[in-house]
Image (tube, rainbow, N blue to C red; front, side, top):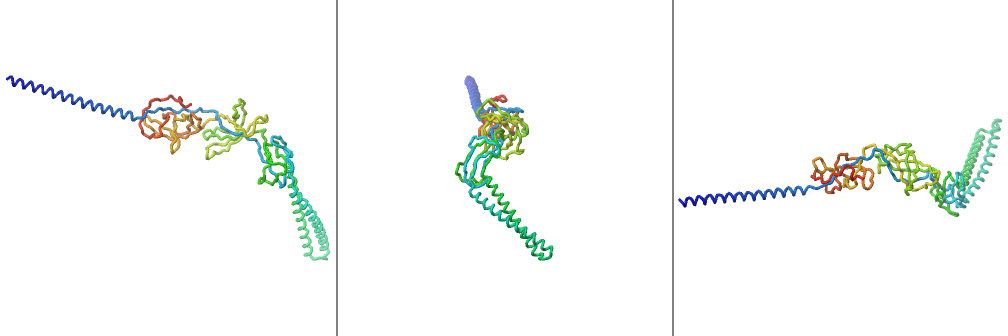
Length: 385
């Protein structure tokens, strides 16, 4: 009886040990599975990139557009000789203010002088021949009326008279041409202005026309022209009569008022800008032609314009892109059209909406559909400027 009782106790003890072993084994398996799942979760979580995003800001509806330009004189012209010869003397130098018709220089033209004398002699010969031919033709016409000569003879003398008259007219035209060339030896100012360049000196060989050497350069600077290239998005705001301010690049406080007088009415195919001409008064003489200036003009954009920090754009092979984050926190690359670049921020004229969440410092390896985790959402406009 005691052996049976001892065996029963041993059986129960063994069963307890087996149950404990099973529980310990199950706990170990559960712990390892939990650790493995946790490791997988942490691995997946660490594989999701952290990104900071920003929403674009809207540019003001009306703003002051600042564009670079160069001051140009209202009239600007090179002065060439109209006849061949040698420069005999010059009477004005750079900086000289001249009036229309004022003598600038004189050219010595010995060949033209000789041609003129020869032409005048040829004209006298032609005049003498024409007078004789006219007298002869008149006489033969009177003889024809009396029936003493043949009609054919009269026609011959009349034709010769007409030919001699034409020869006289040709000789006279040649003399007029040579006299015009002779008058071109005196070079005069075509309009009131300032001599900005002198490119000749006494004794220099002078050739006629623009194939020769430019003698002087003259500019009328009492009124100035300014040309600016307006971006396409602001082109509809530019019209004749629009006022602007011109400021020297030296940063002087004084502004000079200018007015839009015309536009090209067509966009440049390369730059997509509108060439615009402005005029401003310079009767005070303080502005110098050729000066670099900044033109300030108030314009509005015909299309909504957004602003983004410069580090929110990604330049790739297909152009400029912005990397955005969708509502389910996945990357979406959008091509954008960029307007003006202000250094720290740029204008975006197409491709984005104000609600888009744009990634700052996007990675070059960004791929559509990649899940991301937003770690810092900047308030609107906090980094735009």
